[in-house]
Image (cartoon, helix red, strand yellow):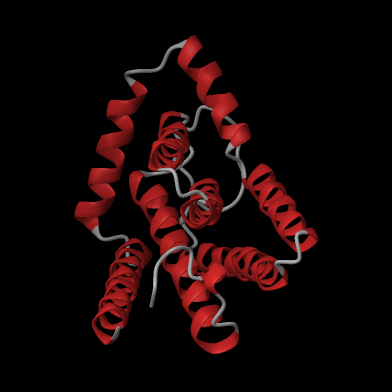
Length: 218
């Protein structure tokens, strides 16, 4: 038990260390990272075609913060109606606090979007809101699947689909040139780190309820 708890905190600490390191590098506009970001976008723009642009526009809409937040709220309502009040509270907490954190980081880093963007988009670039909220949504849905579905023939394909969805949303932001690679990486890292932080807080301090453990014993 103690070994599992220790490894869990090691994962959380490592996740936050990498997340904060990336944030510092972007904040100070670390030259090698900035050059790598721009090189990757120059590579991506060579692949542009009308069909791909239309496809990734649809992906960007489905994976938008508005849609992801709406789905998370819907899940929170459903689990509340099923009398899983702590689960609902967990989802609402991570949704609200996570997006507040996102806006604080965006404003603090103050990074402009790429000048080569293919579509109109507003706000600061780091970290990606699309990827952040998609990551939160996928972590929540993935946790529910892992806890409530025991059949591996159903569970594993669903989990793989969720991971692929994050990848596709990430690619859409890069293809549309509205984010740099470090932006989408930051969105994913912040999503994972914040989800795990809030989950651990609920499990260890408030609830100690099995449904918040998402299939992993602490």
